[in-house]
Length: 75
Image 1: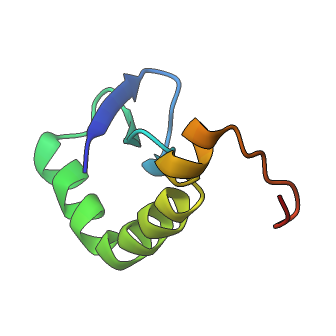
Image 2: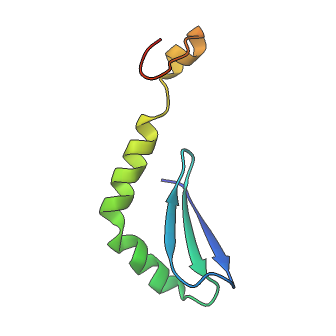
Image 3: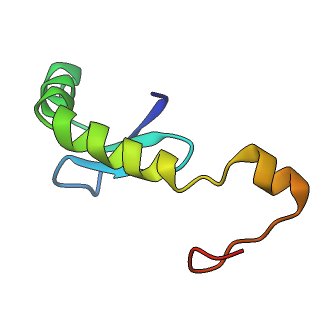
């Protein structure tokens, strides 16, 4: 899955954000890369579930091309 690493001097903890397009890894600027990789490995199960849920929200391409709009599960 695509990811983006964002470092910040103001950030104090590691964090993950899942979007439709990518996973964002937030980290303090002084955190070693090995520690970030270890954190992401520890969060693998949660990350996989969140990514799967987010991808399930994407409407099928055929419905989008046909002009069908869904609201609250109904066409």
